[in-house]
Length: 290
Length: 260
Image 1: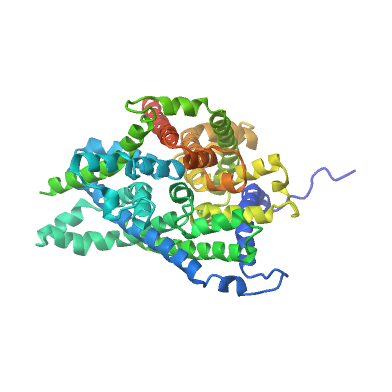
Image 2: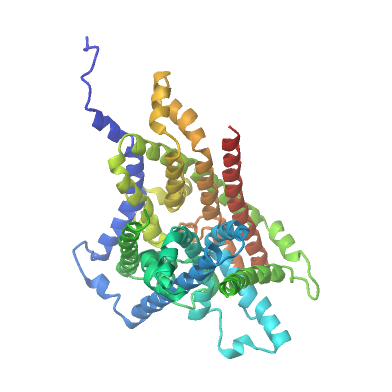
């Protein structure tokens, strides 16, 4: 006969069992695939350790791709932050009717998720060569948009398109932070003789600064990893890093697999740095928000 | 003065967001020469590939939601109840998909689960479907986890669990009949967001070669003029419906809670 009662296992071991599925899933479909890329970037075709793959990144073409990707991400993140901040501030602090807030936040939720292929179609239909705005400008105002050098398939075109999901994301994240500014701070500053701009420059913006910069980092990573919008908009005429990597994965047999790993590794490094900044600044900003 | 600037900021914002939507709608009606018509929509709806790919993506979205709920609800519950020390780690992992671009993750999948690997998922169509579903669940993880975790914060899971246990309930009963109904609104919010993400997703489906709605839209965009605009209107309507449903269930739950 077996003993009727097995010796009780320590309670904490049993507790860990409950999170096994989650960690198993995360390991298989998040951590290991990423590790595969990171390790692959340092591995030569015969399995040895090498830096040749990473060295392959330092060609003028690939460096130019990283530069234009980083430039588009920076531009759309900066403009998204500034414009999103202005709209959020106008609605929370600018004395607009309160009912605007709800619809604005709902719309921001929709627009920040309206990315990818359909977003590209929307802008082609609006600012493309036969788009509504292009035609209205030409027929009603006599302005030929494309003669001014504007092209939707360009750096500024892509930045303009990315703003459609960057601005709403900024509004969604920064509105709670703006709500966290206590009215007493402004009153105290004004009683002590500060002007409105002084209050913003010396009180409000320093408090919001980490949140602003943190959101900026998130928007940057958001734009840097975006693939679908760019592909649907430009085909492959604008060679930003995600498009380059997409082509590399698609045409694996032709290309150099080591270079694919290195490209992907470079993307992880860039978005990783941006998000490390975000996490660090987020922790700092929350100290003031208690 | 202040108020003038506020209206100006809001007005410029509205113009920027409204014009592309108006432009798309107008463009989608232009297929017939010289007059507005719904021809582009008729053409899209008549395309068998449209129905097939949309159907595929809706199916994938539903599977992803079921899997995501089964994975996230027990984990978030268990971590809050028994392993609070682990919360920062779990949260960190759930945020990783926002850091690592989707194209990098799927590249890892292709390399890790190819036909000569320990788990050759890409070797068969059903295996690739499964891999794609896991990929979607990964993309949706940050949103799903945060929604469920926020929902769990508003209820006293410790007391509820003890009460259920003292009445003889097992873990499945507790999760399925106590915890899940209590965080249903949060789960539904996460579910609708997941749905919106999966329906239009392009990168994963394209690189895993599955016949999903995102790659179909891209293909149509490369070959047709007016149909893509009609598709964009349809996609926007789907996104809007998902967000509207989130608002609706949230408002509905507030309503019932006040009455109770």
